[in-house]
Every structure is written in C-alpha cells, then in structure tokens.
Image (cartoon, rainbow, N blue to C red; front, top):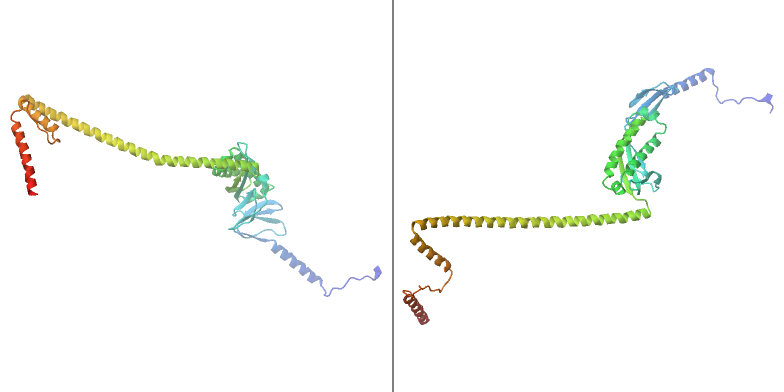
Length: 335
C-alpha cells in the first residue's frame, strides 16, 4: 500500500469535539477531587508538604490538601508501639510466637568487661513522638535506631563481667539501656522514645567457650547448693544451742537466787539465835544442842543414844527390848 493511499482507521463510534472536552474536564475533576482529600487513621499523624516544604501536621480524620501533587501528605504511625529485634527475628508473632532459625551474630556477639565472649539477644519497643522529626531529621531511620541500640548495649555489656551480665545486672542493663538510647535519640532529634528494652537470651557462643562456661556454671550452682545447706544446718543448730544456753542461764540464775535467799534466811535465823543467846546463854545453848542432835539423826532408825556414864538410859533400853520381844510371840499366836 502506498503512502498516498493510507487512511486512518475509523472508530466504531464518532466523538464530537464537545464530547472530548467534557471527557477531559471530567477526568480533571476526578483527579482534582481524588487528590484533594486524604484520611488519617486514629493511630497516625499526617505531615503535609507543599512543593517539598513542610507546612503543617494533621491529626486523625478526613483532611483537604491542594491537589495535583502541589501538596503531599505522609502518614506516620505515632500511636503504635513498634518492635525491633537484635540477634534474632520473629517470623510469626502471636500467642505461640515463631522465631526465625537464622542467627545474626554480627548483632549479638559481644565482649564483656572480663574479656569473655557472650551472645546477647534483645528487643526494644519504641514509639514515634514527633512525626516531622522522624521524617526529616535522619535519612535512614531504621538503621540509625539499630546502630544506636547496638552501641548502647555493647557499651553496657562491656562494662560488666559475664556472670553479672547473665545474672544480677540484667535488669540494670535494661534500665540504663533505655535511658542511654533516649538520650542519644533526643540528641539526634530522631523524634522517638524507647519505652522498653528487654534482654531475651544471654548465653556463651556455641563451642568450647560454651562448654567451659557450663562447667563453671555447674560449679557455681554446686557452691550455692552447699552454701544453702550450710545455712540450713546453721539455722537449725544455732537456735537450738541458744535455747539450751538460755535454759542453763535461767537455771543458774534460779540456783543463785535460791542460794542467796537461803543465805539471807540463815543470816536472819543466826541473828535471832544470837539475840536469844545474849539474853539466855544456857537455855539457848541446850536448845541448840538438842536441835543439832535431832537434825543429825532425824532420818536414822534403830539408833540408841546414851550418856557418858550409862545412867538412866539402860533400863529404858532394856524395856524397849522386852517390849519388842513380847510383840513377836503375840503376832505368832495370832497366826
């Protein structure tokens, strides 16, 4: 076909110039309306730019902007708590969270203050507090957050021994880590606040280091067990010994009080006897003699007392002997 014989294909319908104009106007109107309104969610704030320059920040709701790309909006989730993991990744969060099997040792392997190697996994939770600062003050927000968090945790772990990191200093690292991260984020003007720093897993790296550390850990556990057993025995025996000692002390005090009271009574009695003796010496001497004899022989039976000349007592003794002898046949007769 020659160029002179070429003809434009005919459309199945005919368009009048007026119809074309109306279609163009309708497209422009739809484009203007579609680009004039935007919605901000309840958890977001919108930053509006005009020709790339910041103009205003808008809260949740339906808002208007200059259409056709003159003004653009960027919605930032300022009311959402966001998570960031270090040393591991979460594949599927939920009640039964599934973690990735891939490790990230470049994030978690650290050197402690006593020159041991430890594998520390942790998470941070943060919330964007300034949408404008979050968008414009730092070029790569996520990388900046990761770098700052890693540097802070490395610093805190490097200031402590490995046993402290794995034990009693764990909560301190979390608290100080949150404070230090917020200070650095504020200095960078990043527009976010860290709400939680949580150390997830702290273990020695796999290999000889881990085996040696487990041996040390078992030794420490045995030491603590023996210490607890010793404390238990101490708590069992010491109160018992203290009770026995207190009992002996009380008995000694009672015995001392008894002896003192008895001595006081003897002194009072001696004073009374002395007073009587001074007034009636002979009578008192005789009475004391009889009382002494009675005290000495009060528990003895079958003892006979006679005077030095054997007078006035032998007939009485014989009488007592006959009386005893006469009692026996009488008893036998009754049988």
